[in-house]
Image (cartoon, rainbow, N blue to C red; front, side, top):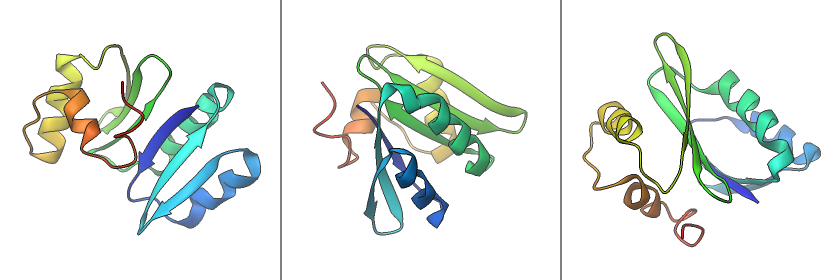
Length: 117
């Protein structure tokens, strides 16, 4: 399974349940689980709703995919071993925070904490 935590998306996300996505609500945010075969569909959905200056990430079996909505469009990164300085710098810049690592940043999220190795 792949896993994504989504903030800032409206109830449009509920339409994915009929397409085989598992959706769990956490207040106004969502935890989404889906199969590898649904990854392209997930990315297409996120690209429709992601606002400029935000990102979404999802955990795969051996890495993390980051989708950033920047002024010039979507930038996609595949990160192995939770290490990519460019991705970490983008995350820090966009949320005006400092993180020790991508892994530590993601572990702070309760939805990911038990899914990260």
